Length: 441
Image (cartoon, rainbow, N blue to C red):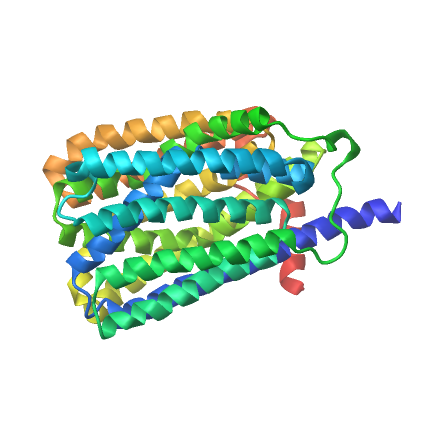
């Protein structure tokens, strides 16, 4: 009896530890970005920043669209069936997706340059393709680490990547060049991939074994089917989140895009905790067998994350309104779209946590409907608001779509798990006691 009582407590402790460590890593990375911005954005022209952001935007789009969300499948299957039963399927799918990303990127450069790379030279076009490929490979490695619950190595890589990129950002004080930033960013990716592969092969002690019912080789087709189900919702989530950025990139100047991207970047800082928690709980929930335990962990995670995010969002807007005009006068126009974006950034927190929870149940296809609704709201409002409000209209449309996506995710989770809606909003006595115990520790 003692062993069965200790196991949930140990699991709960591990989740809290990994969530806090992951959040801390994300927070430190965000702080490094702010520090580098304090010194660099003051001398970096918006068009240079826009060029750098364009490479990131298109590169991330390539691996998001053509990576088929294989990393989500890897987290699920590695956490359940372990690496020994998934190695062959992972290798096959990673190779196939890498070739597809390169082919799609080449097609974008050769035949759609004016759409995706307006005003850019050939170097930045091909750099975006290479960045997309290495982003995909790095995410594959990080997904395996998450599936193995190696969050110490996972966080180390994420933090080191931020530290190195920040160091190169300071070189902008001497040589404000988008080419230097892009080249260093890709070089850092290669280094992180090598480090991640080392972490995957290394174990402290005996390699964990899967449960007896899950101890068999995973077929490539099974992993691909899961990834395709996840891919639809992941692509739509990406489109919904970054549709505004693509519109600004296509319609407005690189300078305006750099300013709008600054607002988006500030807004995304409130996602540090939701991202950390959702990253940690997916592999844990996938390995659980009791439905009540899965629901309990998801509900508590959602409420804690949302309450903290609301406070952080309000503080972010207040701080930005005070300090951006003083410290970053070139980016003062980013404050207005930030005010619109921040509301949606709160409600999408529910979708971030709930989507990972639902995917961990083995039902990633249930995440498709919220993203469809989000995109419909985004496109509809964009057509109406852009002529009236310009860039601010794009921000408002994005915020409304994120809110719609978050609310729909809540409804679907409640229907799927037969959970009353209010339990996603109001904590019960057990949850309050659990949080109090965490703070006492």
